[in-house]
Image (cartoon, rainbow, N blue to C red; front, side, top):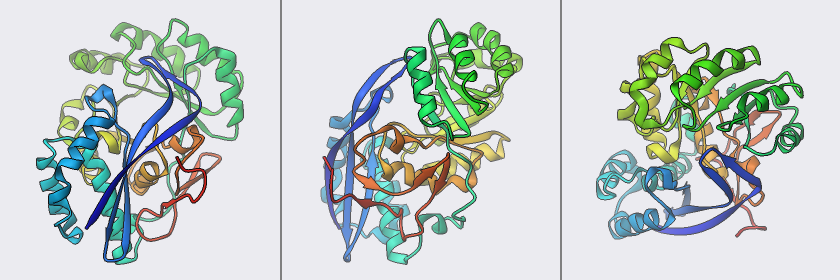
Length: 342
């Protein structure tokens, strides 16, 4: 195999703010894997919140390149198991390799990745469009720009959270989901759940910091709305401990290490009777399209990454009125744009 790594700087259409901070540009790392005349693409969007950045992820992948280039990609599952060990458990680095291998294998077998997993192309759940924190008039303008969407995720974590939801509700009858990104207390969560439910909110994502997971059992019992784990749900081994504390989980390929770990998380959550969402970081069409290939297995999708950026280096899935259209091409179905690439 020939493997290369390239950084792309994704520019946000608008400053994207959550309770922890704001972003205007997000660097991602794209892996290109070539073998037998076929090319596989992978991506990772490292997050400092989970202990990595572009430099550390790139260094981890570069450290295994001499070994990786001697491997046969057809044995991709065994290869990924050994790669995780060689990467020292760095799942954010593993994600790029996992996607590139699945893309290559799908092309080698001439089938889309969803068919590798025995899935259908459609129907898929609709995806949300995320409204980042901002002045309320700006949040309203962002919502109106996508007013054909049936579902919005609203970022919260301020001293005016209920006011934000009330004002946005005046603009649309779409379903709302809210994400506090760990900014609330247990008492706030229980208190806010009732008025949020009355405002048409479907569920609350990660209200408390992950180190307060023990408090989530009481919140789980008292909340008027379902609770979805995000920051508490990183890798498959996290899932069993979330039962009785959350009603569902949010799987992100970057966090867990790609499609193979995501499948394990889906199986675990189903066995525990939990709801499942697949979400995204700020990422290009590679990662979001890869995640959408698992869409038929889950209850909710939050795959609006390509809609939030202005210079997507790749084409892949398309989104119209919240509905994802997966490519039918072999592999992930993503292609490098010939123009406008940074």
